[in-house]
Length: 396
Image (cartoon, rainbow, N blue to C red; front, side, top):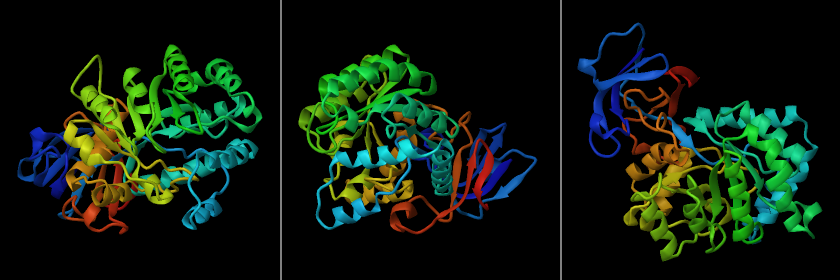
């Protein structure tokens, strides 16, 4: 298949075009066996069995959303309304979702997650990480991971989301459960281990125990950190070689330096600062300072954090627009962070770009160039979405 008459191709492969986005006007792209086989000026495009006319519109890599919580039950709209009336956001609202999730059937959980995945895909997301974290018992965490595994290969065990009510008087006992029986049951169904290293959730030592136990079971580390205030999350993530530390709303100079040093090359790949501006929008919390991170040389990703409490939005385009308006990012930086940056946060080199050999995960925008993602916020602009070269949403 050749996608022809592309107004602007954003490849995230600098060798194919200009700038870090590898932008190429008047382009074509050839897909074979689910991969990008060729990309370049349309007049040089090789022949193909099928031709798709992009009609002068823009093609970008599919969004890589590296942080979501879409396996859940229940509704927290009234909590949102209370926040908008002035009540502060606290992590404890998670407990309401835990109760509803435990009471839900597997089928109900799958129905909700499938609906949200379909919703995200229609908005251009082709890779979606999915966490557990609303079960918080051995049985319920395992079944949430089984549901997530039916929808994504990027599945994260988040038993360390919050201490459930039955362990309120014995938080150490809950950490023992997470690092013992729960991890043994859940590790076979996950690729990642995560922990909410934050006041009201888990402190530094408990977080370290959970992450290192997960690593011993072959899981790679991710961290929720520095969302509600400065804390140890960022430095712990870098210390343990975590793929990402997510939120990063409150960073001190040492945190920024640690992330920048990681990006400059140390013992392994960078720990990515994954920013979740939709959360800060929905909770009226402080936005992260992306400009400080980028200027220091840190690697930055954007993700939705789609969840029922603090950000019930699956729109990566919305995150891009917020990042440009509120986080100090340029439109180009924000798009890179929502595609290639998300791939870095998942330690993937086959998605987030449209270089030769990449998965043919791409989005056709009803716009002449990618600036429209920030230029026209809130307006549906996704015409068609392809995953592995197959049309999965929309009409080209």
